[in-house]
Image 1 (cartoon, rainbow, N blue to C red):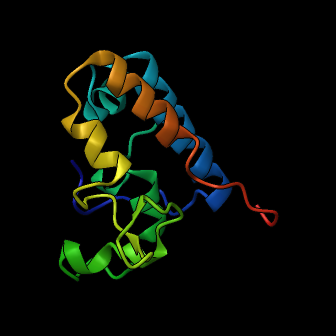
Image 2 (image 1 turned 30 degrees about the horizontal axis):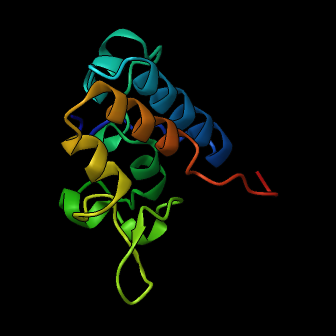
Image 3 (image 1 turned 90 degrees about the vertical axis):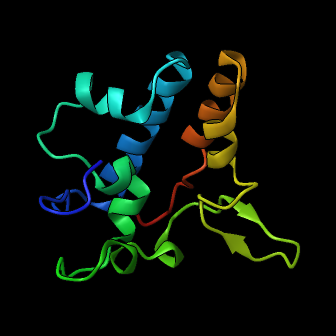
Length: 128
C-alpha cells in the first residue's frame, strides 16, 4: 500500500470515480482477490492511489510532510460508507461500513455482492 510519494493528482474527480468503479467491478468479478492484486495485475498506471483507494486519493490533503493520518481527510470522501446511530456519516474503516463488511466477508458470493455495491456508491455529480 502506498503511503506517500507519487499521487494521481492529475486525475480529476470524474476520472477518479471511473477508476473506483473499475476497481470495485473487478473485485466483484474476482471475489477471491484483494485490492493490491488489482493494482499489481490490472491497473495500467505506474502510481497507486493512497490506501489503494481512489476516494482516499481524492480526499488526500497536502503537503506530503504531514503524517498519513493527517493527509487523508475522511470528511472529503465522496462516499457515505455508513451512518452512525445519530445519522452522521462515518469513514470506511468504521465497524459497520460496507467496506469493513467486504473485508470481513467469508464467502466469495458475499464479497462479490458487497464489491458490486461499493462500485456504485460514489455518486455521480452534475458538475463532473
